[in-house]
Amino acid sequence: MRVQPLDLTTDGDPHPIKRLARLALPEPLREADVAEDFDRWIRDNVPSERDRIGMFDRFGTPPLTQREHALFTLLSILAIEHGAWPLEEGCGRAIRCLEEIQRHWAPSDPVSSYLRGKAAAFVAQGFRCARGEPGRLLSFLNGAPLRVCGDGTAALAFGVTAPVSDLIFDFRDDAFALHSLRSMVEGDRTAFDAAVLAQAEILAPAIERGVARLFERCAPPPGDYLAAFRDVLSDERWLPTLLGKLEGRADLRDRVGGMPAAAEWLRAIAGARAWKANDIRRLVRLEPLFEDDPEAFMAAIVSGVRALEGSEPASAVFAALSLLHLARRRRAVRSELADAEREEAFVLALRDLPSGEMIVRLHAQLADLPMDIPGARAVWRHLGNAEKGLWQWRIRAVVGDDRALRRGLAEFLLAWMSQDVYRDVERLVVDLLPPAQELDVLRTLAQSCDRLTSLRAGCLAREMTFGLPD
Image (cartoon, rainbow, N blue to C red; front, side):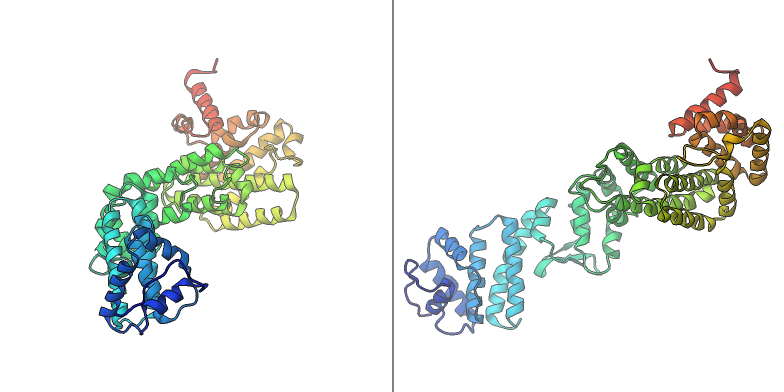
């Protein structure tokens, strides 16, 4: 290959790469050995590694002919090979070079094959070096698509492959990085998720720790994270963890400042499949989240109510009554039509539940109680003892012998009544509990995570056991 001496000191061309192309590539590149000759030529004429890197940095990317593009790509690869950038960034640039080669050259072109081989070799080397370090490996992949093949192989950028199980194992200590890796999988992720599930015992500790880290700024959206690892995570463990974190922030003005909006946290909670009574109790007390997004809050409560109907129906009744109470109080405080319509929407949503009609009827009766609703015209304050007795008789008639309704209402009265009203309905609370089981139920409620419920139930249990408290 005949070339003219390369002069880097005098150059009037605004795009040095074009001048270099004229000097170095007087004929079109057609054969692989020509490209190899140029490779050697550029090393011989610019022997200093520093000069080669500096020369590449000065070139920029002007509009290029195909011949000039080949030169530019080769210079890019040379700069990468000689350490112009850290390994991860160099691999990312090599991947982009490969993409450019695919865009500008036919796969059968010998120059294309030569350039592709050089870049791919560097990518493969970078992949081997990055294995075992999730952060480096993600930087290396740089968002490039990942395919999981039927034989359990993960196909990464430009011919780099690895068993998907080995790749997942590399991320065993960093669940956020594993989530990022999963997000790079093209198309159906079933095979990837199956490979994660196959290593659930190894991966679960880091994935569960990730739930507590979802409030960090580097965290993925909570709903995405929980959905991605749904088959590995235990609802009985992540739901209390998430609720506990939200409880710690509920009273802060910037409780989700810089984080996903309240609706995202509530949607994540709504996705839980296994609820416990204390989970729903904790959620209904997160009133600031209700104020942030009432609809998302309602969806989360209804999700919990549906999950508890079969296993703990009394807790489902308590949660439904609490939701309607919060809606009524918001309507009273704000006095806006939108809140009135929202309360009606909540009623309609709860009516679809098996015991929904009875819950709505019960809620209508409870409107006679003040329950700290500003401006409410509470009938209760205008009743004498005889009228209050009749009111309680009517409540008993509504709940009938339905144990879930009776116990759910009893817990609602323990949790939400102001002190003056509670004194009037305290006897009703005990009467609503199953005969001969009142003490057991009260002791259970005394273990509630809600402090007011716990203290009131504990006091009633103590009275039944020892007489009046000190």
